[in-house]
Image (tube, rainbow, N blue to C red):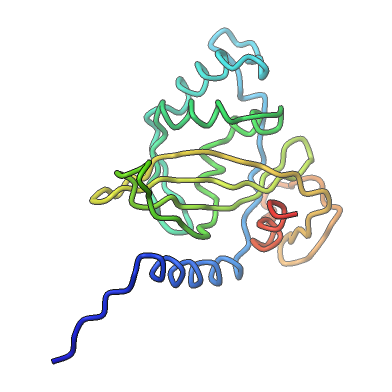
Length: 204
């Protein structure tokens, strides 16, 4: 009688990640154009991006309780007060805070890359999942890295954080043609960038 072989979690993770990374590296993320003017208070005035309290109030009003689905792997994601405020605490720099204007679109258009298992500090977390994407803020391109926490016996993951890195000269693909100097997005254009180029922005 054959004995069942149970692989250590590390080996399972390494195998799973090798498969998902190889698949992601063949994909291209769609550019999400961010409109910073959306970061506006209920009084119709722009939110002060340097004022953490103002941004926290805006994030809760706009996103708290919102549920979206990531198109790439169909992961359902919920924005919670804790996740939004923890992310804001780590948020530095004007572009990263401007990116909040279209946070739900950024999450939905991100590409699944890899994961880490939950640890002793996060006993309820099954996996910390990592996603990559690309955004355009005022004609500047930024690679995005999204973290989502998933839980045992739950289909809904929780938003954890957003990080961005500027890409000076992205190799953009517009309607199947590569153009490095495309700084606008016409109606109907589909502008994409490869996942390896996005990931590289976080490693150099």
